[in-house]
Image (cartoon, rainbow, N blue to C red):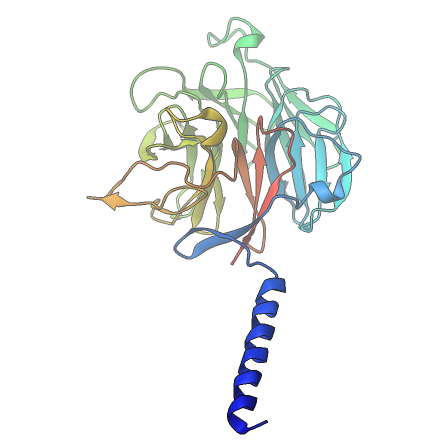
Length: 341
């Protein structure tokens, strides 16, 4: 064989080997999101570890100081499921929360407690991490706000450093109810009505201390925005989120994370995504959604772009800045994990 033929045959063989290598190479994961907040998706994060557990609606998730991921579902066979970050189930408990909806973790002098809202039972509970109920808050009847307990449908809580509890009545009369740590009503604000100081679907609430001043960040989901109040109920500002029916805000570092249940006017079953805002309250990434665009300082309407979620209801951000997404009315699926890239 002359040198020319040898080189030609060697090139063909090498090219064939490279093609075969490409054919058998592991496909690259699809990356979702924008700017520096991009993620890969694992839909089987938890389901591959949970053959004997069930969920109905996966409502909310938190991470405790041990690094465990705690999920609240309205499945009374196991209302609370505790995972490690690989999706392995560590424990499960709870049979008494048919309307388990809001899940808040609060560190009280080094000990962590959970606050659970139940939209079916019209109550809010403080529990330890094993599920023992330590405090129950019922509908505040007799103070001129509610005529019957069914009008009180709490969706979320935020707990202050002194133990005071702020309850968002997001599926009820839309009041924000301020209690002391013993469950005594101290104040209320919001409520249903027209104008920025009122609320419509006050679905989520959390404390926001990012600028060094304590404030409450509250969802006004029907109006596609977050609203900021001081703890006395004075409105401080509005963060407009056109096209996004946002669920509860979650603060991690300098960012706000939120599940977008759907976009108004779109197919309810297939229009959700996850949104991330920076320290200036500007949207910097939409996971499964359109790229955020601002014109004259105003966010233009956003919507779903990739059909990876059905009704995303909450986002948990772990200590590695990975995300876990709980979904409502989505075929009883376990939470998805989004790994930051």
